[in-house]
Length: 180
Ligand code: IMP
Ligand code: MG
Image 1 (cartoon, protein in one colour):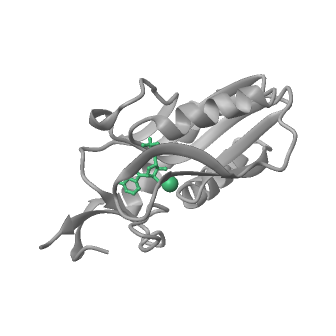
Image 2 (cartoon, protein in one colour):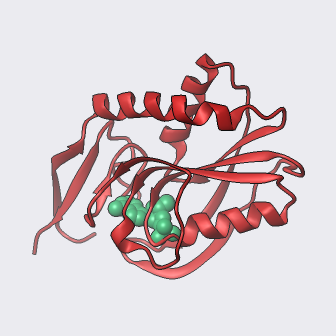
């Protein structure tokens, strides 16, 4: 890891919780299917998905839940440009209405690839929710159906997002400042 520090909180835990609650109010109509599946993209989505699913529960949503491990970044902060399935979902999504959950929409490669992947597996519909969106970084034209926060082009960690597998446990989103 490059020398860095994590001092600047970009989005506090309280602000995240409020926004998750609002998002769920917006999303719940899209989760009304009798064959509703939430699929988290690992590893970054695990905390966000857990919060979404528990909030959706309060609105009577009863999803099946699975995870898809996709790799787009190597270690560090640079994307390789390549996306591949490292671990596929286990459940049958044929005819299911899927909500794909990711931590951050950056170049767009991961969510556009994952959407196609699930449609190929027979999903009836695929919607997407990303906690964060960095629109300035887009390489592939892709917009999520639901977005928590739009953020500037800074490398961020916490609430599931990592730098070299560290910092996922932070309850807030913080900016990584690289020092030389
Ligand atoms: P995309 O395929 O470029 O849209 O990248 C999405 C993936 O890149 C996310 O699931 C993250 O794992 C990773 N990523 C992009 N930006 C950041 C960041 O600022 N911090 C941590 N991970 C990031
Ligand atoms: Mg990730």
